[in-house]
Image (cartoon, rainbow, N blue to C red):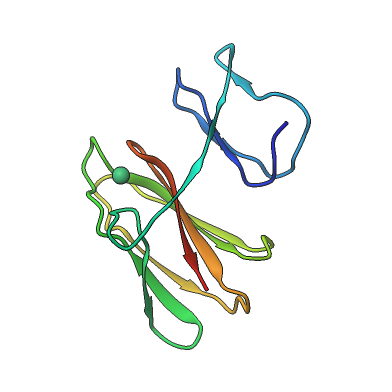
Length: 127
Ligand SMILES: [Fe+2]
């Protein structure tokens, strides 16, 4: 059983998949059951916490105080509206600038979720 927007990883080939529609079957990769990646909640003291700067009424810049090295970096960041109807994802290489700009009218706010190659999935809730 998998639910909408859950992330799963194969611990043999490090394949990561996101659920676009929930289903009853078990996810398998390289012949083994995939691991469901649990979301950790980031607080402001954590390197996985999203810093939000308002550029205008609807435009926001998102940054992190997180290392970007070949051994430890953020592979992708997602902006997920609270109603789960709008999702924006940006992928990063270790030598990219870790910054994302979005335009968002989300009346009820949004969450910022990321996947760190070393520390897994982290979420910052923005209201
Ligand atoms: Fe990390």
